[in-house]
Image 1 (cartoon, rainbow, N blue to C red):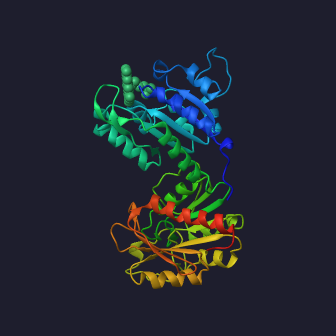
Image 2 (cartoon, rainbow, N blue to C red):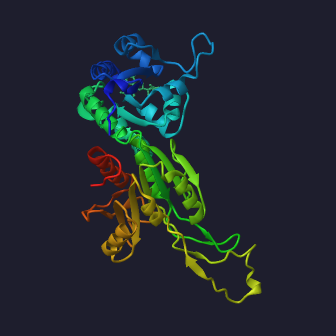
Image 3 (cartoon, helix red, strand yellow):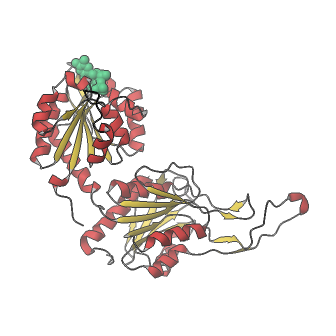
Length: 411
Ligand SMILES: Cc1cc2nc3c(=O)[nH]c(=O)nc-3n(C[C@H](O)[C@H](O)[C@H](O)COP(=O)(O)O)c2cc1C
């Protein structure tokens, strides 16, 4: 894996209207010293705290403060071009107002419109009075944004501009720089890699309105797709039935049956670096699909003949050349034995074994408790964690593999 050089990385700094805006000048200086390319956008209120001229001089570029060009002539769609330009957006300082606006999807100025149009990582470095930071509305907004995959750099305790002592100071610019560097390292860890993921449950039709399926919701697969996207990978997500919205920045393909899922997987598989099969594909399907709707008055009972379904993961295991292959095993007992069996029989590199009998793990839950086993039989029993965190753990292993062995050779 080749890491991007700093000078190739484009940081878009958003500055909002708080006293800590003066620290953004130092932040720009630090970013430039590290070799990053920096562009700055400011809210109207931010310009009351620090002049655009100061930030323009430090960033050696024009500072953007308005959605519209000053002479009303068409130049470009500024918020879209800035969103396309940036690799990462950091908003420092981020006011309570800005955070509330983003949490509610508002786009009434350049900064908020650009944030909404951006598909990469967004980091907030908030700064505000401690009463504001402890306000439950503010806390709810932060919680919501964290769940949506936005990142926050914690505020620090100290003397505040208002004279109070407490939590709410914007993190020190050096700490912000380090957090940004850390995020960038993660962001580009799978840059250029193609990751194919299946999610959710397939539906196998009985007649034209009924089907057999299972309880998988797609949450794990979607988290994997988001975590891979956040590491810079090109992600294709093939999902069965789900209530989840298509994640931004990810090519999402919807299918119904295992056969449809297989067709899509095989379309992308050869050109894929990593294939993660988290979909719960029906092991059995009705041997015949009835035409129309089976009417209950026509029969007292109904015998359904089920037959074995196709095995997508097995097929990819046989076709595997360079791909890293990761499967999931949903089990209610003999977790390890069954997972090991699946790992070997399907030629996988990793198996993620899920005890789906637990309430806080497996289908529909936001958390997962799993045992990961690699092809050499090495086991990692992970604690309960969010599905996004687990996705990060899995992908960090994949990255480690690329760094040490390149494609094809695992562990
Ligand atoms: C002197 C002064 C300091 C302020 N400091 C902060 C602050 O640190 N954090 C904050 O959230 N709001 C602060 N505010 C309030 C914001 O400026 C206000 O909410 C404004 O609407 C923010 O606009 P913006 O988010 O579009 O930049 C301050 C206001 C004043 C007058």
